Amino acid sequence: MSDFNAQVIADFNATKGKPGGYFKNAPVLLLHSVGAKSGIERTLPLMYLREGDGPYYIFASKGGDEHNPDWFHNLVANSDAAISVGDGTTIRRVPVAARVVEGEERDRIYAHQAGLYPQFAEYEKKTSRTIPVFELTPA
Image 1 (cartoon, helix red, strand yellow):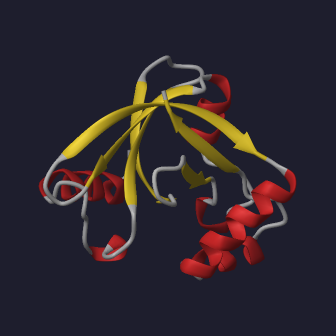
Image 2 (tube, rainbow, N blue to C red):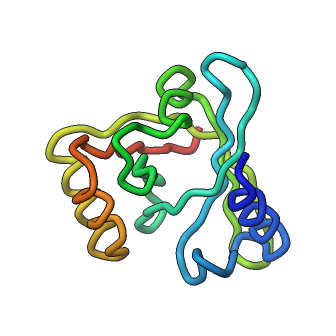
């Protein structure tokens, strides 16, 4: 795990889900997924989109890199995962089922995220790949 991610996770835990720095005022969750090859649980912070009580959406942007992040492959191989979400008072761990969103549905959700957080539009411009979107539905 990178030092950056370790610091964000520590901040997330200390602030009960409301980290500062780069993620100040952004919705952040911790994704707990099982490594496709290792079988070891991995945890990393990700921005997410959620409307009301609907599913959570996460974006395999990797900052606009030409390759999907490792966690993408983990979720494809093992769609049963968990997330930690916090409201500034408590953190709760929620089991989720992951599904790759495709086509028009994917485009609509990604455009919504890019409208809220312009860096996602920049990520899309930097890469030739279609950035995958996952729907995380609480189990």
